[in-house]
Image 1 (spheres, rainbow, N blue to C red):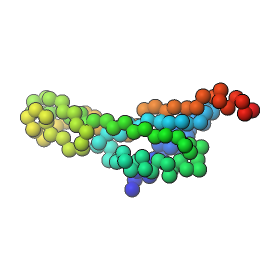
Image 2 (image 1 turned 135 degrees about the vertical axis):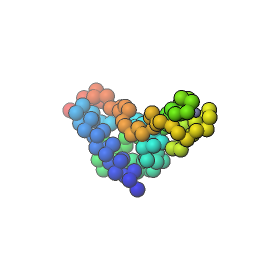
Image 3 (image 1 turned 90 degrees about the horizontal axis):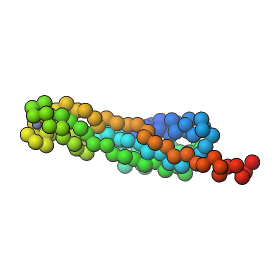
Length: 121
Ligand SMILES: [Zn+2]
């Protein structure tokens, strides 16, 4: 189940980000393309286990599923599809150039307001 290692890698990057800003991570959004080989459901399941006991514990991971964009080499139509297997929506050709769909990236991160900690010190 490689979603665990991907979740740890994402958690690692977010932990560094939070540390740089001296804030706690509240939530983060990652973009997952159908061709990234990551199963969003498994990533969601892995997330709480990966962050348990770390500085990120309690942070929410939002997953934004990205579509595949494939340009047909026969008729130049661009097909948008949320499945990994794509054929041209216009002519049905399988001769396609994939333009996007491999995404696996952190889109945004929401950090806690630093004012919140001011009262503690
Ligand atoms: Zn076509």
